[in-house]
Image 1 (tube, rainbow, N blue to C red):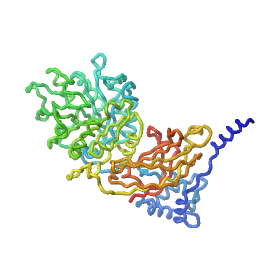
Image 2 (image 1 turned 30 degrees about the vertical axis):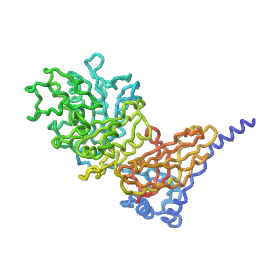
Image 3 (image 1 turned 180 degrees about the horizontal axis):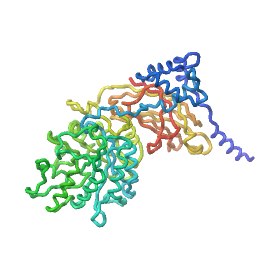
Image 4 (image 1 turned 120 degrees about the vertical axis):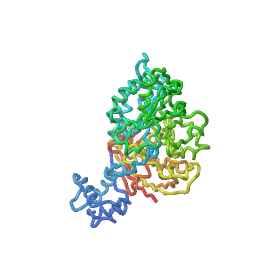
Length: 561
């Protein structure tokens, strides 16, 4: 064998050589504390769950379930858990950072405006905003992830006698509206029973609005929520809207002939409704109808349960509050950022009753996203994201909506709903201190090819851990890189001071060190601080698109004081 061949063979032996993962010293100490003569009994385990893990309602049945999950392992003993079995439990699926029950536990009986909604932007696009295909597949994937707000852009087809869903003014291919509606119907409530909102960006003449009304009505039938009046004084609650589909768009312009003005329960729609427009929706001049078509427009109007629109005039007009009716306002991310500089408290006040939708700026042609906390900190319910992309902002969005059982609705913190209106520009005192200890990781050797990170040696992993939240809470730290090890052990502790923990999300990213600075991706997760379980936890990692790896995870301890 040549010297070069021997070197290559030796390097590959290094790749395939894996040491046994040893419990951290802290785990060994805890095991000794909660065991007797090297065995942890059922009652000992329950004591550990209550006293150290903070699972104050843990019962003997919960401890028994953990015992049962380990019975198939050779390391399990009927008398109790040995150290190795206890360690495997800590790294197991029953010991995740969030409650495994995934139960909806927020109060779901408040008006819709009191919740953050998991919201998509251009939900039909498969890729970039300029040339990608339109398809039902991104809609299906989004709904199955728990997304509750789907956006469809409606345009006349090439023959002007049919409706297409496409990104107007681009090279993106269209998809048939009826296919989109059927995809929503079939997948709306697989991940969550709570209502799905379809936002139409409407670029249609009145005759095609008639087609849309007929398609929507026939597709959803009893699933479609139709309010008793077109001027809701308050939005219904998510609980009352379970398994309902809601349509949100700008009401079509009414006929100028007063004798033909549409009547709804004896009330004539006000002029302000007919003169609203939205930058992310159609201008009033784009929705045209003849006087003899008013009855068809009326049917389209009756679909709308959430009226959208931007009053004419300055920002103060956009944020005006009408005690007799509620509505939805859309702002681009740039418009929102500009508005927050002088009108932050006004935006919070507006969102206490009305809905605010924020959407990506037009230059995000690669389907990138923006910082969602600007919207959330001001009470914006619909922070619309390009779900077909990926990156840190989308990971944070996915992490935020892991809360409340992953149902797609997260109750806004009380301070955003208080009579004493919250001012996001004011720095608050520290409310919580989160301590995070990164112990170790495992599973990359099972989920990745042995040569995925380095051709001739094991990977050099390090962890970035930080907080995404309001500006005062944002922070990021990283561990040292552990060289040549598929089973890295870091044992490093970090501390984060949180002023608004209710809106904070923990970010964890594992990277493989490269001297070029272009580090390889090794997994990520984001977790809502409000639902983080304290104690030592197994943290499953996800790929760039948010799909969970089968085996790759970290062992981490959380302390929250």
